[in-house]
Length: 163
Image (cartoon, rainbow, N blue to C red):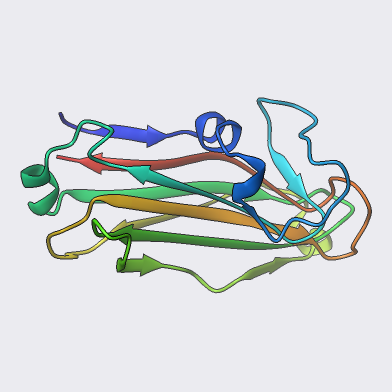
């Protein structure tokens, strides 16, 4: 099967149902633009669980511990800081965590940052056999609690498996 990127930002964020948005308590759940950078003013974490068998992988391929790489891009507005969170878990057939990547929560001040895009990436080391799902959750909030879409912007989220 080779290198396959399982989810890009447009697929990851557009396919999520409202019931899968954890902690959202903002006004009017909608996104201003379907292609671009989502912004969160109240704590809003978006989660997608990828079923690897449904994506066409075989149990034997997954048990061989292929390299799993995750990537996300984030930035702030120039007038408002943000808090950003990312949690990615490799899960077994019962959706129990095999291995987790969860960097410390980032708090960015736009006066020091200038709204530049930053990439965060992680490659999972040897994690054993049994991976059948991958959970990808990201989001955050603004640091001023402004009403509307002012917090962290995210885009180009991806999960790649290298066979």
